[in-house]
Image 1: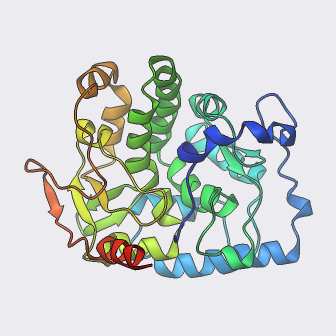
Image 2: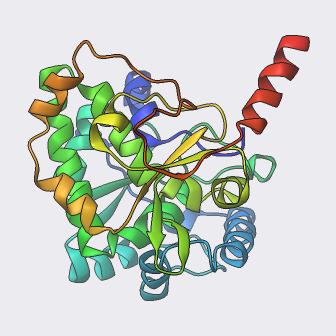
Length: 300
């Protein structure tokens, strides 16, 4: 597996880590001054290889966000400086958490424009895989897009929607929307297909796979379709969903999901790699990568 598991998948498993949280809302001090030279060096390695890779792959909004934020190669960013810039632009701030937090805590932070970011950084041998989102995934992958007003509003609305989905028992449906947009979303720009999802943008190998490999499906985003589609937490995605403009996310932020939950109730759910007859395909994948992995597993 070449990437981190993301917030929505992992936070609910965090109840055993409550002792690490210094406050009732699970936030802690980042402790920026306590990072070691080796930890800053790991950030530098990750930052430099990813920034070399992303030109022509990341969407314009991601690139602009990186330019406007105090994020560089030499040091792990200071959340206080990031928050100063974000607050002026979109009203967001970055708050440090010890790792995984419960779903309701995660949603509550998002609903109030606070992005919970892991304060730790992976070890050098974990450059291509980490189970928990660390500071590189959270800051490099997510924060540049929070500089964009559309994404800023969308993720706040997602936090509010997450609290409602919990009450309705529909969190699984909403989690799929988050996964296939905020984490693994693709955007069709006028000059080509681009990355806006943080799970791709922070992963060296998936940044190539999502755009260049012939294996995955690339399907035009449809809300009901996505709500009924499972995803991979252990490997590259078998399908990516493509929006035509970030404003489509703003439309999602304004709708009432309850009727969509009702329509999805009792309907068939789809495996990650399935293509439906009425899918609007950007590109139909060969499925080669995952077929080979399944074949290798069956031969073990």
